[in-house]
Length: 365
Image (cartoon, rainbow, N blue to C red; front, side):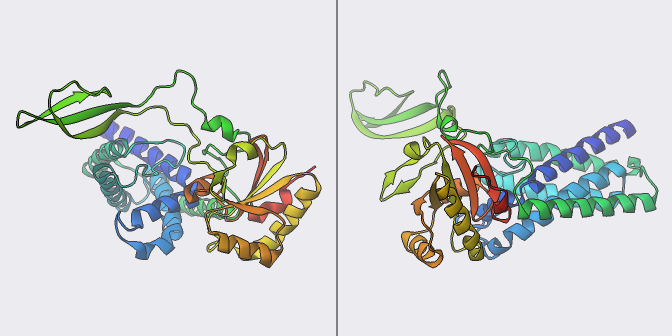
């Protein structure tokens, strides 16, 4: 039992540290996921939506610290019961997501590892069992360091986590797990490779045959039945290949210019998913960057999910010499964790991507 608890202790601790670090690398992305949970039609807790980012940072730092505390054996009683509370909370969320099909990705491992709702729930059930095992075997969890050294380790861990969170919030994630990282080609990400698996659907056809309902199941073909058709239910029984980049459109007046723009040899994208939430003071610097890019032969466009009234007012206010296009808000949030942010592309390949605090790092030579 002593050795089993030791193995479980290390496994759970490392898993919490990895899971916490991946989300700590991108707390803005995790806050978007929390906003989904808090929204109407899911948990119906819109009162918490303005605090999603603060909750995100608190949860991910706590997740990392609890993992470290478990491994070094610091305050084991508090640590284990805190882990239990956290995993019960996560298990509830993943079950809710899976059963009601509300949030299709819990964000447990950010964009690094994608899990289906039921996979996430299964993972949390396993962790719940392991944490309960730690509770029953708590007496075998011994500290690895003296109380003073353990406190020093925890203080340093807290400082490092806080500093890391501060950095990624004011710049961009250190590790970009999304399909819009520097070096990726957007058009390639939208394609489906030859031989990729296709989705398989099951069709339950309902007919009235001689006054009785009869259901015939096929995989697409309309059944040959001597009866009156009533209805059909479609169920996806196997998912097909899904491109890493999807829902990427660049629209203006109802027309999608994505394909055309992704062929531009020199393209600058100014991304602001929601102008109501953008830092307006930054657009003075955006104006300077855009003008510099235009002088160097770049085509500059704005991309936002905001309406034309807002984008037109912004252009007039800052005398912006480029047009805005409409793109889905979720896609823009995925492209860059900055509002606004700037990307530089060469024929669809992202060569530069910066937070608005790092506009000075852009190079248009």
